[in-house]
Amino acid sequence: MLSRFYQEQGEHVVITREQGSQFAKQIADDFNPLHDVDAKKFCVPGDLLFALVLQRYGISDNMHFSFLGMVDETSQLNFPQGNEEFDITSNDKVMMSVKRDGDANLCPSLIESLTKKYVEFSGTAFPHVIIPLMAQQNVMINPARPMVIYESMAIHLDDTNLEAVELESDTPEFSYEGKRGKIILRFKLLNGGKLVGRGEKHMLVSGIRPYCQETVDDLIAYYNNRKATL
Image (cartoon, rainbow, N blue to C red; front, side, top):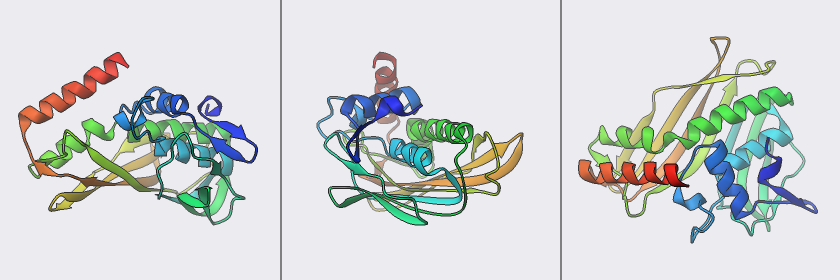
């Protein structure tokens, strides 16, 4: 599933602008302008790094991912031998830190199932979840520069001896002070209707301002137009 979204150059993995952008739009349904091919500050989707980790190291009982660097088309990613703790690096700079424990399942169908379900959930958080969540506290992001940064995510599975999972959104949380805030998106993992795990995605938000319905309507219209035309 992921082979068309990266390439190997010797011991490194490289992701072109086209590959990162296609993953965002075709797999994650994510139309963040940072993932556009012609973006001034292009950024590879963090969910693609997450997906590559699952593909290479399998799915453990408990997994925690910290996103520490911005990956672009110049990054030469090094995926080390899998241990309980390891870092994905580029030119000695840590891009992602991974912690895990418990048995690892390398079942391709489970990995593909969890990858697809999670990145779809993650990619569509904006604007469908984030904007109404912030609106409950009468604030919004800066439409001219919507800074929502992927900080970390965690997954816990009660049982990894599975072939597929379903994902169900759980109660999100938003808190802020001044112009900075934090969003936690939660989800449940199900198998045959039975709860088999949980997860969280943590994001940092800056440039918070008072809520304006007209501005929000324009922002959503702009987003939907991008989605329809790109």
